Amino acid sequence: GIRDQPRSRGLGDVYKRQGMVRLAGVSETLSDASNIHMAIATIPQDRCSTTHFHTNCESAIYVLSGKGLFLHGPTLEIEDEISEGDFIFVPDGALHQPVNTGEGDLKLVVARNTPIEIVEEVPNLGRKDC
Image (tube, rainbow, N blue to C red; front, side, top):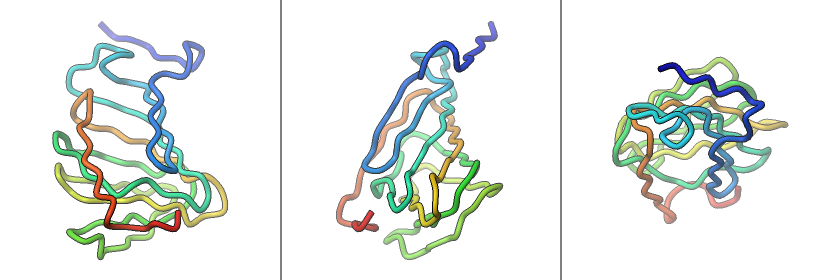
């Protein structure tokens, strides 16, 4: 049946990757989800996530607040400016790195078509100064 995940039930699953913290609201462990994961990712000012790709899922991202860059492409050669209200689609296997260039937190709502992601990091590419 339907499972409500109100904030009052606790923090949910928390994941940390370099400068990014992701708080899951819908996941396999929280709600027995079998085909979806949903979370809020927070990237503090002047920080970024690691350069990475997901091997088992597509991602849909909504920029809830803040501004930054979304680096992507085979060598992260594409730098798209992102800000509140933007939607981002990340195909399975697409290399990417979100970077906070704003004056406060960059908050992203992230949805994936799998309850558990498999992530491959690529430490030799992307921004290192964040």
